[in-house]
Image 1: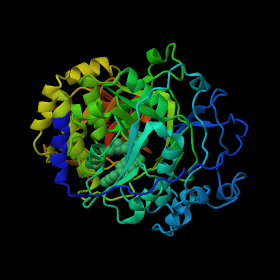
Image 2: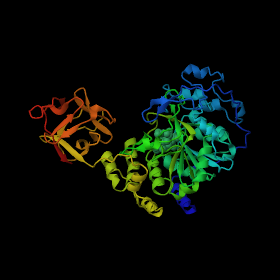
Image 3: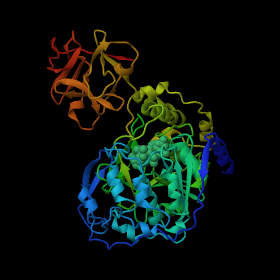
Length: 575
Ligand code: LR7
Ligand code: MN
């Protein structure tokens, strides 16, 4: 492990970094007086992070002890603390919460800088009480927690809202037993605000603040943090989270039982619009699409059989931001792929690698951490978001997915042209760790993942091809066949009757055709190719895809008169 760590050190030294190490004297503690526990509430709603909708109701078995914060008024008139900032600043000796938060950059639009409501975040302040979202049986755990290893907590951040970062750190300090917390490594990924990270040294002597003098992205920042971590366990967290009660013990305990692997808490959603803390279902796991998009998926019927809500969830993927791993295994298994920039992709590589190379991934429902889910990135990507994501996921496909990389390219055509540099060191790692192949992963870890046929085709009429023009929710039309695939290349999914490009489906909308996100069961997206008559049929409307006006290249749906002239006969050909 030492040589691997050294290799990383050599790599990271190229990234030019400055280290601020804590020299603050020990402050007593930042504990504040606990308020009395309100009566449990039973009307919490499960949000499904997959679609941000509510998919069920929390039953009486969950320990919900938080009053819901709904409106601005609720925040100001919190019955337990009648101050703007909900932390007793007098007990944080060297740290002035109000000054720290007030001196952050703000915009007139509170959603602008962070893609979540910064004012509400500021008003909550350094700490708040949140629903204890665990199932009640988690309280009766049988594991012996008396001899657990300590963890280092690593948080990297770029232009995070001060109040959110502060609350993330405070929740770690207050909800982690001190003997289980080796240190907190904050890696400032070259944020504009120099004080954002470094002032937090004043919070607690366990905090180390490192700062990149050039933005590196979360992968290289996390490695840098890991190299400076003192504990035998590494716990990575995003910088806008709130740890819940007893969050760390189940993670650490599991790693003592089975050291080579990765454990994640259930990630409870904190809503970006109002910062309310929601309770996530414990019956979902991480999955992905062939375009390498992370998704949440329901556990299969087989997995649900005899399942208890507090049982570990065996997951094909982790979301990526919140997990614990033994430091030794993290480095032995190659850390992260240092070629990945800014954001995205690293969760695929660490997930595939762990399963394929002798590790495992569990989500532990008795460990809960809240995370602010937002709808868009608040920050810029130096090379653009799409290009960066293509590059990072292409590294995953080329290194870990064997021939299945072709499926990835079919679904993310732009990645074919991404420059990814030399993959040989990572391929050598795969050799060295004697990893199973991707087929093994699919068969054993994610057998229910549908494997679409490779059937890139053009759908044409008199040398004019059906063309999506590369846009979603926009009219599909005809364009002279150019033979280059791209927006004229279609996949026909025979089991779902979808006609797709990447993750979007040909969809009937008001008699015309558009591309729209594929939705299982959406009848407007189901087409059958009638091979005798060469018509494209939508059984729901009993209608066919027709050229409506050849002159203006308008395509839509209309009558199916399969023998007559009304219905367009399409030619399907391999690209
Ligand atoms: O250049 C950057 N440098 C950074 O240090 C860009 C980001 N970051 C930091 C950032 O401040 C944050 O703390 O990296 C962290 C993750 O960035 P987010 O919060 O913008 O990402 P996310 O929550 O949208 O994305 C999820 O997927 C990412 C893929 O690269 C990472 O794995 C995130 O950690 C991950 N977050 C979670 O798993 C939380 C649950 C979300 C889901 C699903
Ligand atoms: Mn995040």
